[in-house]
Length: 477
Image (cartoon, rainbow, N blue to C red; front, side):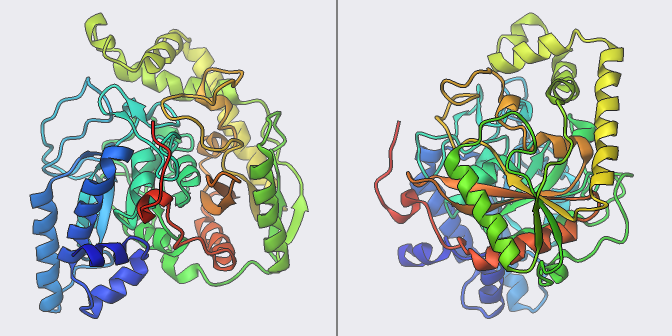
């Protein structure tokens, strides 16, 4: 089994499905490989809050029986999938990274988990997240610090850091994530994988996200094609969410059109006053050059984002305040100190101040709608910084204490609800992943995926694995 385990971790979901269909491998072998990898690596990374070996193997055995009887269930049958601990899943507790939640198993699936179950997925575990997803790194009072598989001293980003780390270290080719301010794209960038935030309302949420108008479930995967595969499952209709859009395309079928003739706005800093790490800037400039060589019309220009950080924080952190309003002082002492601080501060803002922030959100949506009359896609870094020390909310020496200050390239698209993807585009000189971000107009998810797929074909980093996974030496704290 050990030699087999070593052969699976860099294979894509698409490749694994072909092997399952040919009976070259079994779902149980894949599940055993995933569980062995968790056992071998996760004491160092801490990507998973909970695993249930018996349940995982039971579902894998059921998948193998379906393959033997030629009665497979759907697009994911037999594939290992990691699930962010924000999603309800039958038989598992949903803790949201918080000591204020309890360890009682839930009796229902979130819509995206239910869709994965209909398609035969094999869940390998619940992945770690910061408390209630409040920040863009992954540590919490409940589960401690999650680390980056590329360098254990560094953060994997957040809030879906556990999901991104699970994919990066080869446990599962697919993971469920959710994004309210960059929570899918930032950890994908920091961990060298693909993370996609669909158009708001594209995939169902029930119960509704704490972060409502900002949040959207999305896939994390090794490749754009695999992300499209999981997205086809996640976006299936569900009566629980009235926002869901009908007549959605099959994303796997729209990846191969190329970028020739597309109008791409290359914006190194989105016109914002933020210092971009030179190595990040150079890697994203390389993406712009490659897309131009592939036939896209790349123009250096900035969208009119404006100074909207305070507006975003009012929308985002006020929700955090609402989540803890029913807890007494003793319970609040258990919270992440940073979350408690922002929740108590933003719990005091007026309804008028909140509505001002929401008006700013709507105005940005209008500005971007007009901007996309002349531009198909925007290209910028996913984050201006490289992965920094684990256990910190901001990089050492950073002039601001809140995560929103170093992630200004992701949360604007949560305000507008536009689709955005992070794709690996290189590494820093010390071997840390860099992500490039592509953003499209609302409802143009297929075009974002197509452009990302085109770029990934000319810079394939799919089978590049962290030294930790390869058995190389790794810095540890």
